[in-house]
Amino acid sequence: MGPGAAMRAVVVPRFGEADVLSLVDRPKPEAEPGHVVVRMSYAGVNYADIYMRRGLYRRGHTYGVEPPFTLGLEGAGMIAAVGDGVRDLCPGMRVAFCLGQGAYAEYARVPAWKAVPVPDGMSLDVAAAAMLQGATAHYLTHSLYPLKAGDWCLVHAAAGGVGQLIVQFAKRRGARVIGTVGDRAKAEIARRIGADHTILYRETAFPEEVRRITGGRGVDVVYDGVGAATIEGSLKSLAVRGTCVLFGAASGPVESVGPMALAEAGSVFFTRPHLAHYMRDANEYRTRIDAVLGAVADGSLKINVERILPLDQARTAHEILEGRQTRGKVLLAA
Image (tube, rainbow, N blue to C red):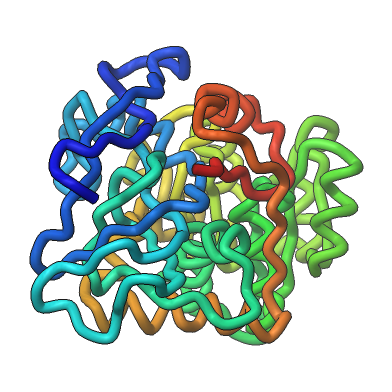
């Protein structure tokens, strides 16, 4: 990559709706010390990208960024260049990463400790799709609330990209899984990947159905990536001293949860985590990613790549996600 070389990248010039996304020419990144430059094959499309595009994270210390910026937290491709001090990685290696920046592009500069070699036999699209959502599902079920055999959990949007992975990890740990879904086709997807019970949330008041299924007890943990539309019902679905995990806002952000609401729900616990806080250093990052890719490689974790769109259709990809039309992972092909 010579000086002044250009690449295509999807840029957010200002905060706004999906129509602000622009495919532009930008300078190719150089391999700074401790970094690698990846020739991108695929970038994952995530709700976090939408939150960043809308400016929901602009004042945050974890994912805060100001326009103009290139979107994309995860992807996979081939190393094009390595910076000074980088060991164990070299040009030509196939790698995947998450919690990077600028993945919606033909090239991305990634901290070397976040670039993980893709196992032999695993396609780059599957590797890209597994990274951020796989790590999210892993920390939710293994670290934030370590599920154990016999636990009850409620998974909202169980047929969505991250929902499917939460269900699978939960079943691997011996938990009993209730999934909410939008229609009967999605209910079948959730059952096929292991959900013990499914609830059509448009037809049934899910807190009452959760109580019925659990014999009045409620669930030990709710994994809620939907947000505003579900949070009240999520709290009502918990057992005494249960845990409500709000990890996303597909239906809109939750502005507040009152302390007395937690007490009245059964002295329950409430948390709004960031994935980055569960992958704080190279050891924690690599341990979690190795667990995810290892489960994919041995066939115990199924990744559903629903559709792949070119970079110039990033707006469409965001609209699909925002319309909650997905039954798996959406990728952009560079």
